[in-house]
Length: 338
Image 1: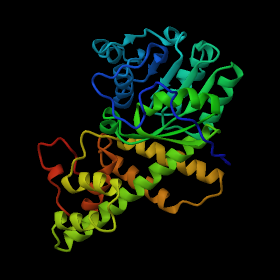
Image 2: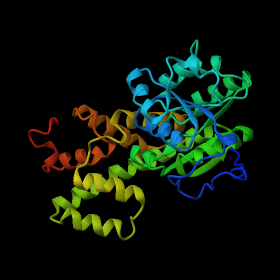
Image 3: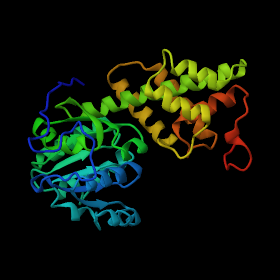
Image 4: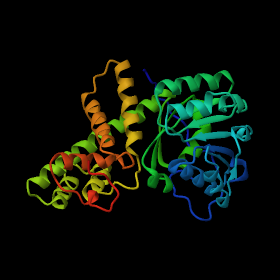
């Protein structure tokens, strides 16, 4: 895939500056209020909906589980009974777990491509394959609609606090329209390309790098612990010297303290993302032996019955493989030690 990088202008004059945090008294001008549908109200989708509401937009929320949409009513959202209720929205944001779910919502009969009006913008924030993103871009264009792929780097906590990194790609006009909204969902929006699938490829690349870092952090912490070094001391040395990136500190801290619940990224979703990355790499003739190894390690986590844990449980697997005890696996925690 060849992607061309483009520049998009900042928000229009009179809008709240994108580099300033929102204050309680902030209100956008009525001319900037948009009707926004949000589809998929898991941890990330709910955070997106709440942030858009707090910024003054009109949000209509839909989830296959109607209780999730009902839970947003107190925040000011309208609960959509079906996708057809989103037909008058200016934007529809989707936050769904995989290709199958996004395909069904977008391309099946009665899906977004069929019901959205011409000129409306579908913003897909899901981690999906570049191939599906290509199909969606083409399908929306054929109906005179716009499509922006905007997956994110970050977890639900960062989504709630607007600290995500947004990776956006799409046609320039669509990006210009979507960027003011995306700037309110994260701390920075990276414009990747005018080719939507490039954002999905970039997201998969980021998740590969995170997963391989988790694996290496787990192995190293097991190594020093079994060698007799206090893990906290080792963690302080590593993360306050050459290995001080956010991923080392945040996910390394989860491994150190065995904070594998609640899952920010559940293991099955991580397996899916590594599988998508490896499939894309194969199509591009790019060997990725480290990614392949970590994919199998994540499958190993699932094989132990730990599918509900955060993907940082790669550290738990490394400790168990090294014959080390784990407080997390103590009786009464409801976790299998198999």
